[in-house]
Image (cartoon, rainbow, N blue to C red; front, side, top):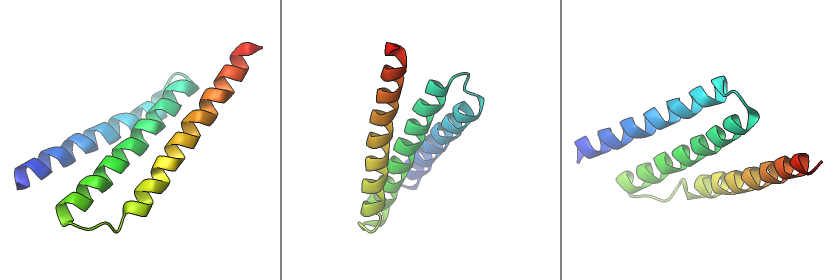
Length: 87
């Protein structure tokens, strides 16, 4: 079980580092926005895995807040980009 947890943690860390790298080096604003959504999703997955391993639901409100942040952020960016393309 420890090996599975370590592999999952390593893969989530690699995903988070890749997203941070794209936020820093992204050639366009849209790349940075998508990378920030990936980072939020990775953090949510890590929190969910931590809850499953330790058998508690203490961080569930944090996950719900991050999900709300991700949805509102994606929708607002999509509306901004679409209104900018119309003109």
